[in-house]
Image (cartoon, rainbow, N blue to C red; front, side, top):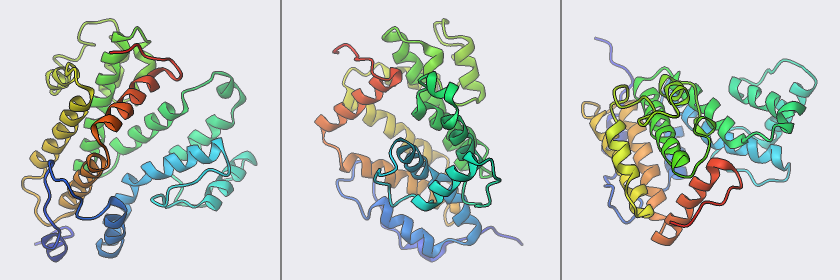
Length: 282
């Protein structure tokens, strides 16, 4: 009988932690190094697709400033980014297989003078391209994780955009069915989602939490519980490893944040819906 890659000893040796843990067993960066040593080639390539989030930030920061400090979590070097941009400028084919197609699309858009004149929300464009890419990943758990987070983010963005009188369609990213429904039903009370999105009522309830810090905690707890529920029958496979990684990232965020910083981060998130717009005080 054929079994997909199993990681009995590696997973058995991983320390347990909970959502309310006060201490990290190790950082996400340290865990990433462990994965580089332990994973089979196919699974390593799969998780590299997820870790592209750090390369996305590095590319965006480099385009804004060639001297920008780049995250060591990215796998595409400064030199590779520079070479990619140069080849695109010269209209040469890209030969570096580490560069995902959506990076090329983003760079071409960045270099387009008309796009620059439009004063695009570049972070939103990168997020949109990355989410569309992630949903197409050929692993059910990872693909559904991307889509679930995209749906949560888009619904929350739509709710807050309406609350503060912003353009709902402008804050929605990605092109999955839920994103399209929100754009097409921006004026509808439920954005057309109450019968289309299983988590609609849950996210709506979470959005009504008045304490910003607690709101973010509850949203991350929802994500955590989703991972647990969707890996209940995964014990020693890459899906378990992926869920462990995602939970570690959630824990790392909260271990490094106190209540005051959490509120500041969330306010910046809301303000970012419309660039430099200053949101009214709660």
